[in-house]
Image (cartoon, rainbow, N blue to C red):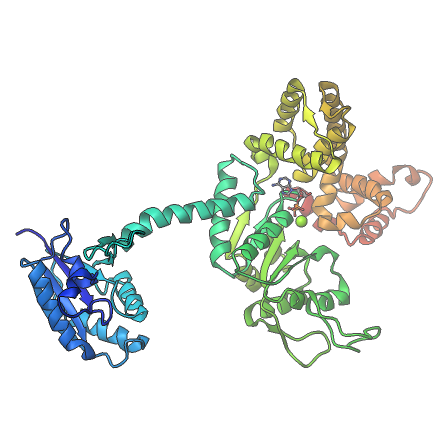
Length: 533
Ligand SMILES: Nc1ncnc2c1ncn2[C@@H]1O[C@H](COP(=O)(O)OP(=O)(O)O)[C@@H](O)[C@H]1O
Ligand SMILES: [Mg+2]
C-alpha cells in the first residue's frame, strides 16, 4: 500500500472565510493546500472550533470540490477561547491522544490558520512528537505591484523540525560555538589538540551552566586571562549581568581575609569604622575568580562553601544575612587532592568546585602553539609600542627552535616577556638573529638561577614570593643541603662546618632547627616535600 498524506489543521475563521463565488478568487489556506499540483492530500483532518461550524462545513465541501481525491474528516474542537494557551493546548493534546496515528501515513500539521496560540501549541506538540508529523505552512504568492488579483493557490512549505534542527540550525549552533571558542582563545589559532578540546568543552559548559569552574595549570598558563574571557563570553550571551571580581587568595591573610571576601558590619572590630561590602557581594550576578584557591584558610573555605550552596552568608560581625548570586571560578596550580589529604583543604569544598575542572596545559606541552602565540604577542606589542615589529626569517626560526625545547617555567609570563624584550630592543622594528641569540642567552641564565629555587618552591609553595631576596638565597642553599643530608645533625654540621672548629658544644642541629622555624619549616617535613619531587 502506498503511503498516505494526511493534513491536520484548524479552520481559520478569517483566513478561510469567504462567501459567494468571489471566495474562489481569495487565498484561503486550508483550501489552497489541496490545490497544489505537486502535493496530493489523501485525507484532511479538519479541526473546527465551536463557533465556526458552518464555515467548517463550507471549507470541507470546497476542499472536496477542488480535490476530489481528498477525504475530509471534520472534528469539532471545544475551544471557548482560542487565545487561552492551556485550553488550546489541552484541546489539541486530547485530539492527538485520541487520534489513531498510522505508520504508513505521513502527517502534516498545518500552522497557517488559527490564533498564534494555536500555532505555538501545534509547534510544541510537533516538537515533542505528541503529534508525529512535520509542520506545513501555506502562504499567498505576493500581490504583484500592478494590482492583478492575488493568486488563490499560493504555495506551501514544509518545515521539518528534525531536519531543521540537524541541518540548518546545527550549522548555526556550530558557528556560534566556534565563535565562542575563538573568543576564549583570544582569537589565537591554536593547534594543540588537548588545548582546543579543553576550550571547546569550556565553551559548552560556560554557555549552559552556573556551577563553579576550576581552572588548573602551572603559573602563567593563562588561568586569570581565561577567566576574564569566560566572563566576557557570558556577558555577550546575556548569561550574566554582573562584574568580574578577581582576587589571589595568597594575598588574603589573617582576620582581613574573611572581611575582604564576605564583608563586615560597621564596628565589627577595632578599626572597622565603616561597613564593607566584600568581594562576593560585589560580584552579585557576576563572576568571582579566586586564584590560588588552595591558599585560602580553612575557616574561609567553610564560609565559601556555604555561600556557594545557599547564595547567602553573614558578613563579619553582622547578624543579618546578605545574598549574592555569584558564579565561582577557582584557579590553582596546586594539586588540591594532596592538600585535602594534608588537611589543608576541605574535601567538601573540593567536591563542590571540581565538578567542572579544566586543565590548562603548560606551554612546553603545546609546541605547535608557539608560532601562533608568537604572532599574537608580536601584534599586541606592536600595537602597544606603536611600531610594527617583525622577525627576520632566520631569527624567527632560531627563536622557535629554541622555544620548543625551553622549559618556559612561568609559561606565557616568560614567553611573552622574551618577545616583549626583543620587540622593545629591536632597531627599526626588526628582530634579527643577534637579538635572538642575546635573548636565548638571557633566558638560559635565568633558567639556571631558577633551578636553585626549585627545592625552595617545593617546601614553601607560593610563600616563596613573600621572602626577601636576602633570605631566599640563603634559605635555598640551606634547603638544598637538608634535602640530601642524612639527618638534622648532619645537615647542621655541614652548614656550620667552620664555626664548629674551636667550639666545644655541638648545637648545630638546634641552630638549624631554629633557623628553619623562622620560615615555618621543619626538618622532617622538609625532607618529605623535597623527596616527592
Ligand atoms: N593564551 C594566551 N596567549 C598569550 N598570552 C597569554 C595567554 N593567556 C595568558 N596570557 C598572558 O600570560 C600572562 C599570564 O597569564 P595569567 O592568566 O595571569 O596566568 P595564570 O593565572 O595561569 O598564572 C598574562 O600576561 C597574560 O596576559
Ligand atoms: Mg593568575
